Length: 180
Image 1 (tube, rainbow, N blue to C red):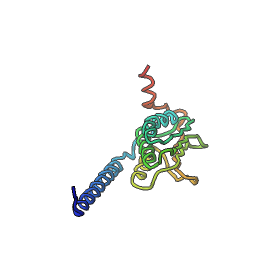
Image 2: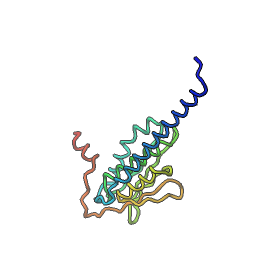
Image 3: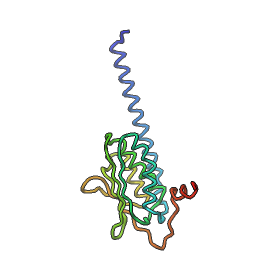
């Protein structure tokens, strides 16, 4: 069966148009989410260790499927954040990194207390673009302050929660309590 060069070219153009349409739809979804971020969300005391572990736990199957290792070192106490925004920002961050890392790649997350704050260091970082802007906006709404790290990756700083603030139950805590 002979296919004319004109038909081949039209199929190629159609394929390129469909790809551009998919990219446009993805871009519109990111912009829609950026516009809907509640930057006035209340910050409460959350167990940073438990919260980050539960966020990473949800992404492990995706990482495993893509052949990427996630390393997590989280040994800290309470942070002041908005849990829902923290979860969404961490998902967007990990999803963005997992999408571009090659099989055998590695994501490293470290949550540690410093003198007056808690830092979350993430390597290798996220590619520039709309998803990165969405992630930074979500991290800001979660109570974090994002900066680029000199040795690559990013650092998100959160305020330590006051010892007087009661810790908010995280979803992970609720799963543990209800699964027994």
